[in-house]
Length: 194
Ligand SMILES: [Fe+2]
Ligand SMILES: [Fe+2]
Image (tube, rainbow, N blue to C red; front, side, top):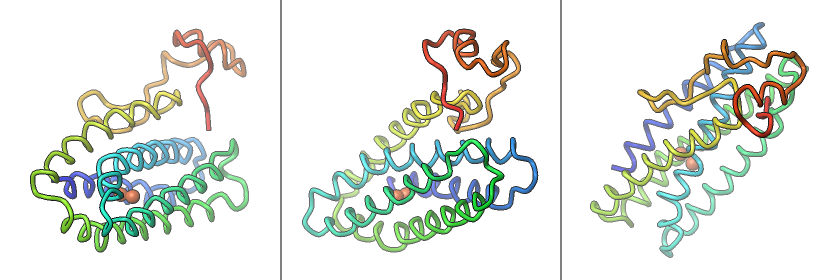
C-alpha cells in the first residue's frame, strides 16, 4: 500500500537526519551524510508528489492537505539550498541542519498522522495499491536521477538506496581540475560537488 511504501522512506529520512545533526568534527563524513539526505529528500518529494499529492489535489476534500504538504516540500528545498555550501563546518551550518531536521520531522509526522488519514478516505484500496507501485518506481528512478549530479554518492544496485560511492577509481587525476575528473568518468560536464 502507498502509505507503507512512504513510511519506509520516512524512516530512512529520520535516520539520516539523526546521523547528520549528530555529526561532529569529520567534515568529509558530514558532507557525505548531507548529500545522502539531500538526494533522499528530493527523490522522496518528487515521487510522493506524483504518486500521492497529484491524485489528492484532484479531489475537493484533498485540496487543503496537498497544498499544505507541497508548501512544506518547498520549504525543505530552500533549506537544502541554503545548506549546499562548500564549507560545511562554517558557523551556523549545523544550526541550519538542525532546523532542516526539525522541519522534516514535523512534516513527516503531519503526513503520517493527518494527511494519510485524509488520503485513506479519498482513495480506494485498488487505487492505493496502484499508487504504491507508482511510488516505488518513481523513487528508485529519482534517486538515480539526483544522485547522478554528485560523484560521492550513488544508488546501490541491490539495495536501491542512496549510499556513498566508491571513489577510488573515480577521482580526478589533476586535483582542482573538475573537468579532468568528468572526462575520466566519461561525462561531458563536471558533477556538482555541493
Ligand atoms: Fe512530504
Ligand atoms: Fe513524505
